[in-house]
Length: 118
Image (cartoon, rainbow, N blue to C red; front, side):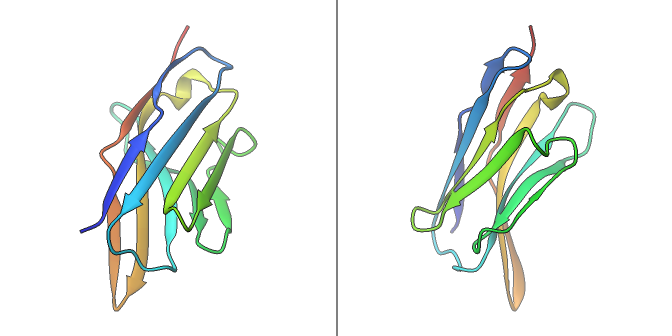
C-alpha cells in the first residue's frame, strides 16, 4: 500500500511564497516520477510540475520561473517551492507518484489547499 501525505498549504498574499512537501511510504519502485498537480474550483486537475527519480523536471508554462520542484530519493519526498504567488494559483494541490512495471502504478495524496488572496 502506497501512501502520500502532503503538508505546507495555507493562505498567502499575492507575491508571497509557500513550500509544499509530500512524503511517500510503502513499496515504491525506485524508478518513478513524482509530481504536483492542482485543481481549482470548477476546473479540471492540471499538471504543475514533475520530477523523475533521475532529476529531470517538467513545469507548466504558468508556473515556470516561479515554482521549483525537488526531491530526495532516499527519503521518498518531493517538495514544491512556490514564489511570487498569484491569485490564479489558488487551488487544491495534489502530490502524485507513478511508475510502470508491467502495469501503471499511480498514487495520489489527499490534497492541500493553497489560497492566494489579499
